[in-house]
Amino acid sequence: MIVLFMSSAVILSFKEEKSTFNYTALPKDSVASIAAFKQVYTVLMSARCMNCHPSGDIPLQGDDNHLHTMFPKRGVDGKGVYAMKCANCHQPTNTPGLHTPPGNPNWHLPPADMKMVFQGRTPRQLAKQIIDPKQNGHKDMQKLIAHADDGLVLSAWKPGEGRKLPPMSHAAFKKAWLTWLKTGAYAPAK
Amino acid sequence: MIAITINGKQREVAADPDMPLLWVIRDLLGLTGTKFGCGVAQCGACTVHLNGEAVRSCVTKVSRAAGQQVTTIEGLSKLNDHALQIAWAELDVPQCGYCQSGQLMSAAVLLRENPNPTDQDIDDAMSGNICRCGTYPRIRLAIHKAAELQREGAKS
Ligand code: FES
Ligand code: FES
Image (spheres, rainbow over the protein chains, first blue to last red):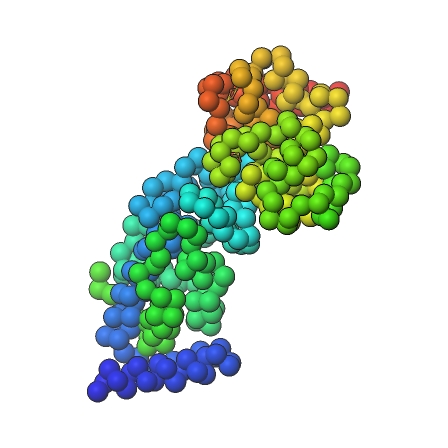
């Protein structure tokens, strides 16, 4: 019953979301929040998200998260260095064919002063990091909510040929993301 | 027709907007200094400058270059006297030569942005340009040499 109530509340708030994009908090619920984050975590740790949130300064590549061939570096602004800037190979759209660069007009890593590392983070560490404006790119709750529809985030679901999709649809991810945030953005115990 | 400025000259090409810039450069404009290596952004042989950045022309659609400035190896300098070209000749860098126009175009961006690069900077800039002949040690020396020439030129 509680579950039913929760999910209908979420759906209602979605409708609001679309038209106004206002942050509507739901009753705090650590159980629902943590359950939702655990789903979110599986997406963030999938290759399509984690590969550009590496622990070092070289992006990762492939479904097995190996270091990006050619070792391109993050650079100060996250857009690469010298002759090795992301956009030199990564075009505004995916390049057709296997093993070709995926594309997005805004392709980049987080900048050097805000690395937003996912690789190696536990669910607890990552949850806390994401809601900390000092570590999340100065995002408040509104901006975190809006981030679910960011162009680069969405491109995880259009990864180009031969690349595995995140473990759930974007709609399911967004639902989990919003549920996590709106029920209190609790961090799992570990 | 798509208009591009190539090596300072305004050109119009009858190309599909999705045609790789490399095809336009080599087949439609007849500038064959830029090479086709892999076709999938893995080797760097096709590197040209698009508004000064070292893009890989094999995966860059000509539509991205429409109305923009493209420079190929033929346009790196007017008299083949870019500091890199002088250093390259002095140190006899090329072996077969196939990768070298790409190497030079990448190195030119490095030297523009960093007039005094360390070995590490050179690695960071050049690790995407592959040389099957293994001329890497001479490329590194020649970039240091060119940096020196460039600095001397700036002083005099
Ligand atoms: S031919 Fe373009 S990178 Fe190899
Ligand atoms: S000189 Fe032969 S591939 Fe580089």
